[in-house]
Length: 149
Image 1 (cartoon, helix red, strand yellow):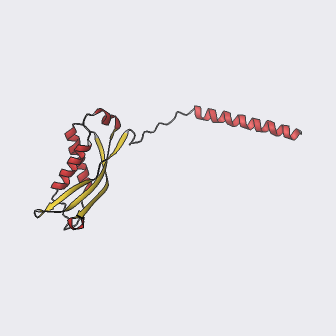
Image 2: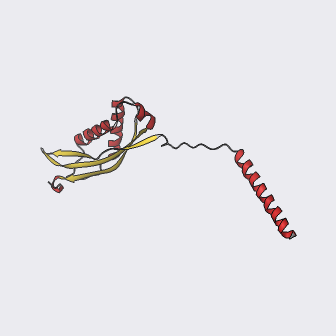
Image 3: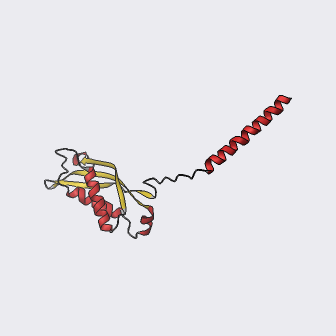
């Protein structure tokens, strides 16, 4: 019986000591606040875009682009004009007028250059640094002969 009583005191002492150590250990440290670089950003997905590629006086096919953009959530709530229309317009204008985009002579396309130029143009049109980043979800070319009528 004496062993059981001593074991009970021992369990209580260890529990009290560990609780005291845990409380004093966390009280001395200030909580580290880590702000991620994407905190406060809002992701918005744009509807799929179909951009015709015209060459030799005829439509050769369509570029299908699915894009996502990030912007500061607070800024998006405050502005009166939604940036989605500006992004779609700039991407359409850039891809439609790009002379280096030739699907008969395939080569690597500079997507980073396109995205950077489009983002700069959008922010310039909106008058502030609203669009932080444009992400490419899908960027494909569909030949005119592959389209079902």
